[in-house]
Length: 444
Image 1 (cartoon, rainbow, N blue to C red):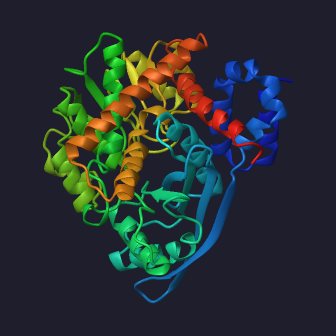
Image 2 (image 1 turned 90 degrees about the vertical axis):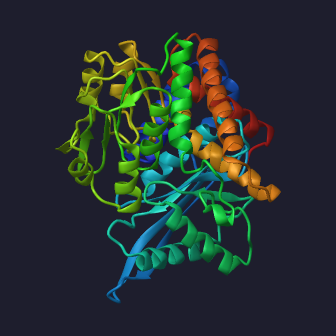
């Protein structure tokens, strides 16, 4: 049995109740086979894969808080510090009812390689809670965030672990958490990213993941002799990533005609009105039905279905496992040229393979959505230097990082005879840097 298969068997036996984590590990290790096989004896002796698949530490804790009716509520909080070989742990805090340890581990594992790809000194981690901020008052959200940070603050710090926003964790939540951290620890430091601009946040951070997604997509198209101009895009999601991906696609001359939320989706053949979408989702926090009511050209549909719309480029920007094998077949049948992931692992493994086998250019989330964490690391740099860069400075650095990521994953795939396999290229390029750092630091 090969070393990869041995480790996969161990990980499956040990984490049998965590399907998302197992999916992430299997996808990464399978694509790393050429690298592992070339160094099998060395990596096996050092148990390198076992160490990279096991978090350095993980925390699970109770989060009690009081709602507006005076009732005490109890949620579960998590932080998984996965790998610090190349820098402090870095990864978001997800607030969503679906959150459990397996999902946090899958996200933290992905973060190791994504952070490595940015070229910046940040390790991999992730955290969150099964708390749902939807429908809660500002006071209830504050009560939860303060209780959550009262425990989390024991394990994080500017040079140890720097959490960020994620699904359910926006500027409001980060603000409440930062205030509580400062209150308890007595430290004004860059311990969280995604902060407000008045207290250490970075320009472009809100736009970063969506903009970065389009910068790498544009470089992919350019490398294949294509332009973004005149292309039709379909996107899922209606949060930060989707909104700013749609905005940047329009700035590049493409037209994005769909978006979605947890209850339904919009098809707007004239192109999504970004300002209207921002008003509905960021200001009023309403459902997409409100978009269709305000925009005569838009159609609202219940459930899921954005991938049935004919497009040149698909941008899954919502959540894990949202683009299924039947969706992939529909995209191929409709002549889709590229799929670039704005979310973490939004495409199932069989759908990914189908797209690749049928000539669709596919860039996975580790590379394509790395713009968010890259800009978080730029925020850390500004905090450390007590500086604030202009929008143009940060945006320029972000674009350079995303263009470099594309060429690094392209080169890594070519080196191992897998030209055009950007998923394998991303895993290899991310892994090589982490593996070298781990080896250099000894058995820790």
